[in-house]
Image 1 (cartoon, rainbow over the protein chains, first blue to last red):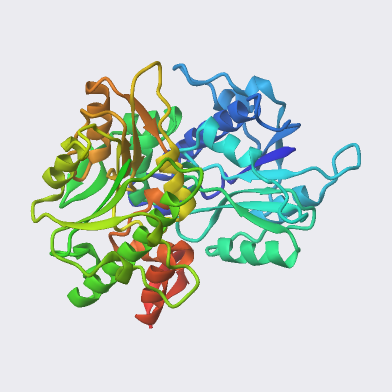
Image 2 (cartoon, helix red, strand yellow):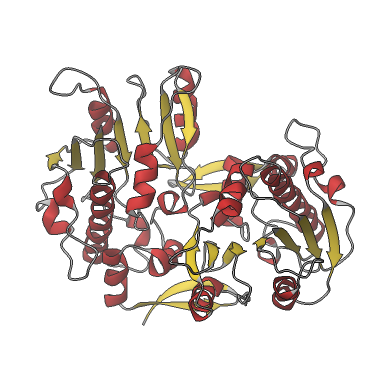
Length: 240
Length: 240
């Protein structure tokens, strides 16, 4: 199995611009990426996870080695050593870059399943990612594709165990991906995970990070001055 | 095990007032309640679920029998027959009403575990509810309390297997409930479910119902004219 984490450094988290400057958005996006890579690395290292051959950080620009990104001064880190992690730079948009991975045969010439996990799933834990990687029993003899919806109609993660499935990322991608699974005569599976379905795009998502997020993302927000405040029954992340 | 679904008819879903009139909010709230009761009933009837003695609809006002609420003209309904469902009217606020259930011994005099599932979890499925009801292995010999966070800091569902746990519902209740579990020397468990963590409070939640919601809630929104629309990369539920 291969796991791919796509990451776009060029226009990071533009919908957070009401509360974060551009350089802050880039730093926060890297903190979230660090949490996702740590969760993927730990999930891949679990005994009850299928063998992960490669974790690929698919980036639009060159990045420091992932071991730097997941470095941390608390007890959560140092987990990526369990699987090879490579950085592949691909400047194209998300959809063709991911589809090339889905189409490419492995070195040995045989197609292997591919998981795609978005880089802004700041609530991801090893257990949540492992739940995705373990998923995928055949249904009535058909190879499955497992989809994890994102809040707002997107597709936050998937596991393609069928070689003909291709992605088309956009606002309402989940609905289209569902149709594509059926069109490929694959079996549609879903993983029900709040942690994987919560992507961080806009200010209203920041309370989730402060309450349930990974160590790097949460620490970054707190260092930047964000705190929880209850206003008229609603929780907001405000900057002090 | 007892399962309680609290429901407040008095000020239903006030934060939906930008898009729904008061009578519409009441009708939509009942549609969501129907989906929740159907999911709870089906979960309770599964062979791999612990025995559910009673499903209690804890309402601030008298309601038609739950079998009416879950009545439907599609293939999803007719699931509540598997467990007794009673309606208990309690006009008090949510917190004392639920705490009385948590404190009350069963008829036989022995305390039994209590699950509390909010009435606005329109994405709840039998599998998601069953995941909660099945949870609760002891941790290091301590009885557990399982919490399911709601988006925005709330507590959407819980399963108290420890007799001393009490609730305090408010905006940031999840954090307080976490502390109360520890204070009771109970073991803290969480269930990671997008379906149970998505409560429906405001217009931004409606796309989730249209995309992933139960049959009654989704049908109600569609009959009221709501459709999905993508605007500048964001998905909205707009009324046609």
